[in-house]
Length: 166
Image (cartoon, rainbow, N blue to C red; front, side, top):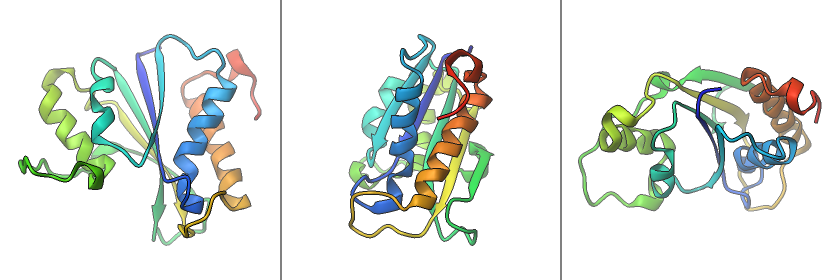
């Protein structure tokens, strides 16, 4: 297996926005122990702060919720990161806590140059609408998180090693 980083984004106190964090929790639970070639990171709402832990990975998978997708809650999307590119910004005063993951990837590419796996970045998105200040996801999004966890394990061919269902 390629050295792979899986990053889950979300805010655990914003209801369904926690979906990326939930997928990471499920993966850590299911893949215990975590294979040596795999780094699983709960990014929460941070992005730039964790970039240096991504150096020397061959592949990255990102998991996040997407608002206003025009699809039903729980709809899953998988796409190469280049479909969601953010242009590199040269503003040294950028407010790091407001940086989104697509912007963080742009900065990482600039910082790491040849050590950045730009050709093997996949983004998994879950359609959400509820981002109210509330702990706990809706049943639809919790089910989507489980489905997406299984999809990621299947994509990485980890199902047979660690069981197929959650």
